[in-house]
Figure 1 (cartoon, rainbow over the protein chains, first blue to last red):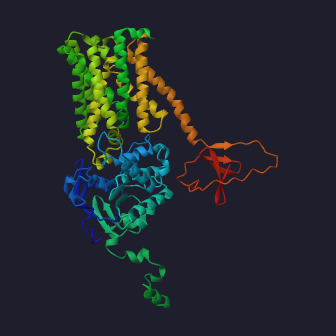
Figure 2 (tube, rainbow over the protein chains, first blue to last red):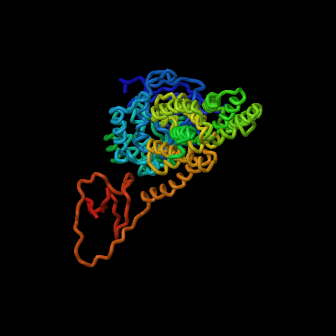
Figure 3 (cartoon, rainbow over the protein chains, first blue to last red):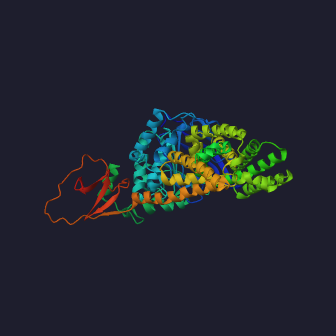
Length: 272
Length: 334
């Protein structure tokens, strides 16, 4: 990570207003290559607005955003970025999977020309990564929610990005499909991709997450290891003032009572 | 049927209908994908202002209406992109203002609303050879980007945010779609008419979506349906002595009405549970035990879309026309 010290994505003091109301206030964050960053927070905390702002879909009020070292306003190499929007916001029921994934190549394709062999190959590989190669000619409306989500990931992968941004990929997806989704993302990480993922609940993606950024009322309240419990996520200030480890993380033998040393303690200390 | 081809005005009318039937569903596919099915109707109202202006200034109606309608379409789209037309009120004022202005200008020109009616519902006798040349040229102007830019227009219409992150000039493509729609609406005023053109943009697309899977296949099928109903409606209206627009739209809706049960039939074949009943077999001859070949796919997984079939006491999966049954670590052919 020291070699790629330039972050893939950097936001400095980003503020956003929608309809005159402050939504994001002074947000700074970075995503490095090969890193998975989870963006957490409750409803209305500004997660989705932040992602849209980082991709230039929502205008900034204040602050700067750089993608791959270039200011967002001057950024042109959009094929390095793969975006997976919230599934519920788009209208693709009648289209075929291959048509949807193929549209992910348009950043590479000049207008009026048919797709090249490379375009077809990239779309095919993207569908293979998400395990839906045999569904290329299926209609989107005949797939389950989890499969539709993977089609949208394949569409974003077709451009062969270095940074993948996912907005609530697990929303409305059952646990079994969430696990498949986690396996797909693990494979992408293995290939060195940087991933920024908005999550409402962490679920099966927890083992993949290197760093969690927790938003609350448009501010970053935590940037570091994944919070271990929902209480910590939603009531974060308690963890900042200490005392947390003794309450939940450890077993009963290290409770608040007087400590009696035993032979096992010595051994476990030697191991660690 | 051959008889009507001997009239030059019918030859022109049928050619104009053919081009309209080709164009309207083509651009309609993107309009429906963007969930703006009624945009064509609104643009038709704006085009009426153009017709009124043409009557008032004694110009040819199609060129003036094209200019007015394209200007109105660009205005609507720019307002939408700036977030100023999120409420429908702005659009309503523009559209009905266009209709009112058209009627007023027509009245000032001395024709009253009667002069307008041939543009509202189409008129077979009104297609001049000059009109036909202009319709032909503008049809090419519309068809080239509609087909050549199909992947780009599809991506922008289906998921604008994603298209923007791809780096596509989404604002430009959105304006292209509404400008092409405006030209198509105006060209259609000789055949289906400005009040009914929206139906020809939307209904064949809806019917085609019922019949064939996939966006591009549906687009092509919709264009075929459009040609069929337009030419059929124009020819039929000659015999009925009715405005062609009404008959074209009735034909289009008839095709949609037929496509509906077909689509539910297709959908049922995909999802309905099937129970296989076999005649009781008392012959004591055991069913041969046939193993499937190598089988990397696992039936019953979340990804499995093979039709599950209840077969006696177990579940088979329909797979390329035959059935697979789970048997220990392999599948049997049933």
